[in-house]
Length: 86
Image (cartoon, rainbow, N blue to C red; front, top):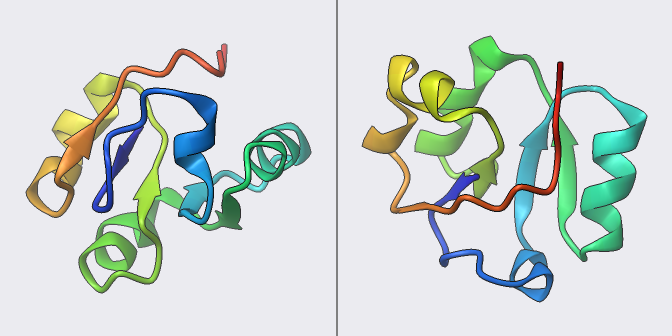
């Protein structure tokens, strides 16, 4: 999980963050339960959305964060372990 606002250490840290998710009902419901604003969008739109602060953060495997260079436009990277996608 990366974002530009704060490190995520406990579920309450999600509160108020706009987080990019896949258009997946389970991910959307999970983030809503933690107080975040899930924002579905395609992966192709994420870098620009992060750069322009349309969303505060996103959740992806570390390999994706590295290859898409999300670290260039995000301040925090937290290993939260709240989802698993096969």
